[in-house]
Each structure stands twice: as structure tokens, then as C-alpha cells.
Image (tube, rainbow, N blue to C red; front, side):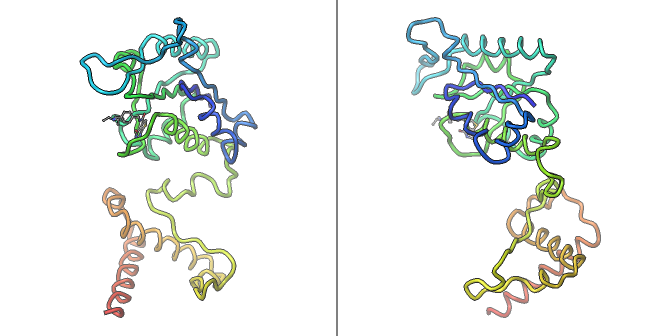
Length: 255
Ligand code: 9D3
């Protein structure tokens, strides 16, 4: 998969390939990350990429000309290599990113990730060249670079051959819309706290059921909206009922 990132801070974005799973994927040529600095597409001596907003107000806006030229250059290069291209703008006005959207993006051949700085990008660039607009969530960042890095990370780990099949992306809790179950490792007793006995039972069916029950119960407690559109089979329903009955017993004991 090819990522072309348009950014005033290429060294920041390149850091995503510096370590971990994305680093390994880049070294194995499973992904190809290129950064494009719109400053290199300016023609004035000051290499100006921003200007004051029409209508007044605070802050600056990214000028359209160098951004359009950059995108056209990327499109031409991708076309010459028969790479289909989708252009994504990271912005607070976009839909909030989720795993379903990430999964769809992972099927693309090439993604152009446009990162804004200042107050954002001249709206005509979005009308002319942008296919999708995505946000990380409802809080204020200083630019789109972290969004691009988040996308590169989340997409890369879904690509064929990036993860070993053992901890494959299929096993991720979010791929079936539930939160994860709790994890434990040695020592068996830490600060006086024991691990759940079932995890030492050696009964893999019981362990799998317990984990499923924990995933269902924690999702119900912490992110109930995730269960709203989810169809639970009879076994899941019973596991959740038992989980809820259990916490009620524990709550009663504390009264
Ligand atoms: C304080 C500036 N705000 C005025 C009301 C608007 C604003 C402009 C530009 C807020 C943030 C930004 C820069 N943010 C991004 O480019 C961005 C972002 C974000 O801020 N939050 C969540 N996801 C994203 S993706 C890109």
C-alpha cells in the first residue's frame, strides 16, 4: 500500500515508520510512505503557504495553489504506476474515524493524506480534489499530521502479511465490535492480588467462555452504545446476564 502525505512537517510524519509494526512493514516494503511538502511547490521567495482569511477573523488559511499542484503531481505519479488514488483530508469537520472506515481504506492501493495547519485549507481544494474528510474525535489538535499517522498505523496492521496470523487483526476485539477482555501475566500474585482462577484451570473452553463474558460485560459497563446495534446469540445473552447478576451480587455485598 502506498501513502502520500502532504504536510509542512514531513519529519514528524516519517517518524511513524521509525519503530514497531509500521516500521517493520516499511522495511519489508509492505507499505511505501512518501511525504510531500507544499512549501516545495511555492514560487515566491518566502515560500508562502498561508494567507489571511477572506472575511477577516483570527489565524491563517493554507493557500490553494501549492496544494493543488502537489496533489496533481502525486496523481500523475500514481497514474504512471497504475495506482488508484483516494484523497483524504484530516480535519475536525470530518466524520469520526472508526475501525469500519479504517478497514475500507485498507483495501485501497494508494491513499493521499492531506494535513492542514493553521485554521485549515482553502475550501476550494476540498471541493476540487478531496474524496473523504475524517476527524480523530472532538478535541483540538494543531494539525492533521497526527491524524495521518493514526491512519497509517491503523491501516498498516490490517494489511496482508503485516501481522503474524497468531495475533491477527481478525482476533482484535474491535473487529467484532466489543472491548477486550482483561489480560494477566506473571506473577500469579502481585501486590496481594491473585489472577482469576479460571485462567489457570487449563480448560481452554472455560477460558474462552470467561473471556467472551468479560468482553461482553465490560462493553456493557463502559461503552453500552457499542452493544445497541449488535445482535447477540443466545449464548452471548446468557453470558451477559450471568455477568450482570454477578456484579449485582458483589454490589449487594458492599451495602
Ligand atoms: C482553535 C482553532 N479552531 C477554531 C475554532 C479550529 C481548528 C482549526 C484547525 C481546530 C483544529 C485545527 C487543526 N486540526 C486538525 O487539523 C485536525 C484534527 C483536530 O483538530 N481534531 C481531531 N481530528 C483532527 S484531524 C485534523
